[in-house]
Image 1 (spheres, protein in one colour):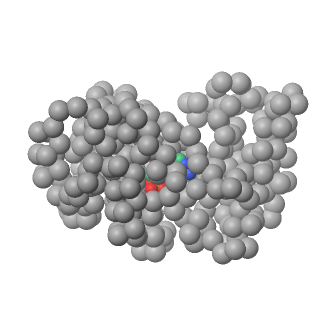
Image 2 (cartoon, helix red, strand yellow):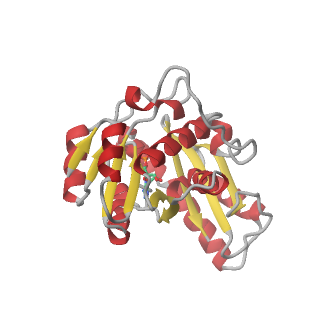
Length: 273
Ligand code: AMP
């Protein structure tokens, strides 16, 4: 595995290669969720590139940019073991200049749900993903369904900006208790982790209601909220794959999303139906 910090050097290297490139952008503190993206990229491409960059522009003032887990050595080892060919590990100065061109998330889809609790977050995400995709120029780029709204907006960006990249969604990896893996799970105390299990439990409840024929969004959301209590709930929503609210679950076209806070940690989860 070769490690690059400079965007120009990585670009030169990648442009000299033959074969399809699969790209997995991450913020590091790698876990099995990230590894499943890397595995899929390896299956579908000749060359796999992973980036690790804790992107400052997607953190709002007062969020956890400073304390976000950084584990350079362990992450390098994980990438090596997973068979990554190129690791891109830039600093903020390698990616951003002072007076910057940047992208704006769409007014509606970028400012509902996660975008409503974190206004401006998705503009930072889209800007950095655009930069990373331009550096790496992959045939395929891999994103987790766990961050469903992010995946939706990146897919939208690739389409609306006429980009030559295929955005590949990857299923959510969970721990043995059902909690969706996340680098932010590191922040949880044992008790908070236990409370956080209410999140997958609420989604399980939604699934069993739907299986028994209850498909009205209001009823599902009410039951999910009851299970999530006393966690602080940022939102529970039933939307279609374009992120429009649904009155009733439409099989094959529905995502049920939750964001709740355990201790001080925001946790996201969802199911695709
Ligand atoms: P992050 O490092 O949190 O920015 O995540 C990098 C990529 O990994 C994103 O596309 C995430 O959606 C994806 N990801 C994070 N957690 C999981 C998970 N538990 N299962 C699958 N993909 C994930």
